[in-house]
Length: 303
Image 1 (spheres, rainbow, N blue to C red):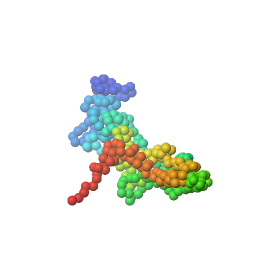
Image 2: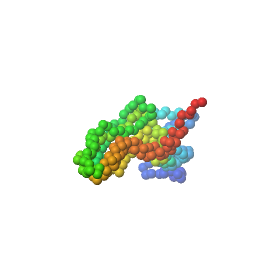
Image 3: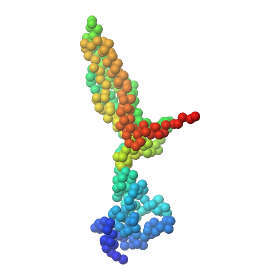
Image 4: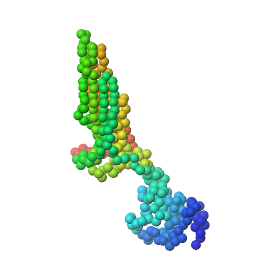
């Protein structure tokens, strides 16, 4: 039998590494025997040439593979793989996982970590002192959901809501503010899934379907919903997105009260603005976008 290195040197594609030698009994092992196929060498590559398992010729061959395991139909899916076999290297993460993201792309750990409940505070001071306590809650299971998952921002009952009080001059203007307005509010953010199984389902549109998400392995609905949560946090922590009250002494009382009403309405409307922002960031990207997906799956009218 030729020496190990001599055998490797006869394969131009082989990658010979010091200390990596072909097992002496490799030719005696029948690894895959199914459908009349017998492979008698652990170092037999995809093109039937003898090659080191770490070389291109010893791997899975050209093309995109969705599984790192043996393609032989007679092999048991629970069978242990020989550590020198290409399938074993791929299954345990020692080689490139050829996935739909492109040849040679590595599948990375998904970026959607378990949600950790937390609370943080944002504030904006204008003619009113505004403080918002944002609470990120644990994910919930709601079997009554009409969709697989939904992420919500929602106000809780107001903690403090103090409207301005003022005195009026003879000409009908605000002469002095006797009670400074102040608002302290609590905003909850959380995700509901229809089931535990739904979390691991594939995202149907938006985040989870972009080229980068696919390359990184971030294709689940859980990841998609985590992007909505991130969008909400990014939006509310940008002070420019929070409403302000610019009423001041010397203004006519009508204009002063109108500005206060505008502030109230914009504050109550903040969750809707957060959702609109997130729809653009997380739903209207990728292939397909949500608008494209909805158009394809719109119920058809009958007769």
